[in-house]
Image 1 (cartoon, rainbow, N blue to C red):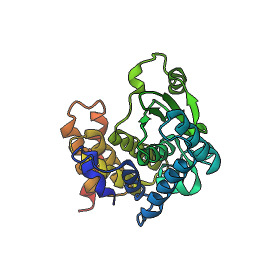
Image 2 (cartoon, rainbow, N blue to C red):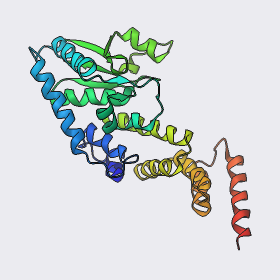
Image 3 (tube, one colour):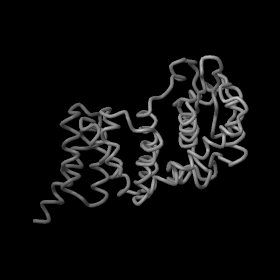
Length: 268
């Protein structure tokens, strides 16, 4: 189902909800994934929070109730001990195991908020991901990875480890940016673990969504060479150089192309 993300990532269709986009991405790890249990779980979380909230129109009351339910009652928490497990990036697994990384835990909070018509947005800080509740009367930042800790803007800057307290860092992230960050997390994990088939699936998706992106062609070419798909890898590296003729690693890539050419010639 990863292919369903193509138009969404290309900016051609913004109608896909964040939960479904995240579940589509999870099919890289779980190809036969049934979305229904995850969507029903999010529905149940939202209904339970509404039932427990004395005044759902009160932003402070909503945040207190949502935090108590999500981080105390059902036990959502950050998986610091196994942070780079790809399952932490799969919404379905986080909903079942209650363990995740900042962005997937934030997606749960955002999607619960959407179901209750609450103003919850993702904030893509460098090195961390948090959320903001802001209904015009009450505004706060929340850190789902650390038990729903309530944050000030200054706390967010400290988490981001930046010296320049630029308010643009606290701008709400569009859905597409959130999903792209999840994709890049998985890409990094698959490269580190040498899960080349899954890395290739991620890169195919990125190239379909943005066929003019030179870097993705280079990465896909290198992955294909690792998988001994020499002809396809050569074509991707050539495409990289055609899209980025002034690449800083041009000589290195040309050397790899020559080596691949010699290897292919030896087969004939």
